[in-house]
Image: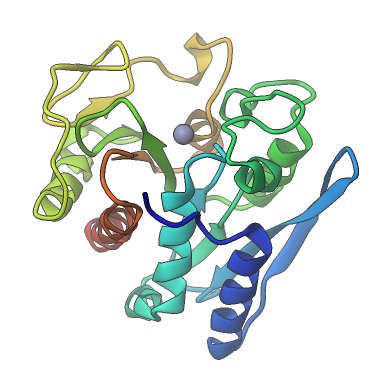
Length: 252
Ligand SMILES: [Zn+2]
């Protein structure tokens, strides 16, 4: 058994300290209230004004802490600085704070926030995330975990042809650290060595995950990264940080 992940406020405190070292601070997108508990939903923008823009997010499913901790590690370690010449980085480190605190996939209203992005009246958390899309991104990356998967895999969708997809190279970067999911089908979709090319576009779907909303908002490359929960939390975090860095290198 590994130790429980740090609480939401602790994650925010660590990011705030790291942001201050970079001469900036977190921004409050808005407050999210469920029952008696209110949490601020926060974002962090680093390298403002760089030529390309990336959106990194995690914690939309509250029981998937590796993504939240990977973003925290990426910022706290200062490794993000290597990319600031090319990238303005917008982070939403934990989209579902109530779910994160309770270690539940859903928010307390029973909503899977990653199914809410086409809704005419989406959950509060989702509406706040949508507010950052007033500007276009070149790349979006969402960090998830999968408790059924034997290895790391990812979804990718791009406005370009397949030649520009970074997925295969991202998996090459993480495969020394974690096994890949080599199954021919993952979650009912054909997979090529752990890379799933989303079959349907935003128009064809009744509901949207954040990645398809991102695509609809003209993000050039949308990645959903899935780390297998069978590995230690520390390894899952390392795999996600490695994937983030590979994607930022490959897509600049
Ligand atoms: Zn998830």
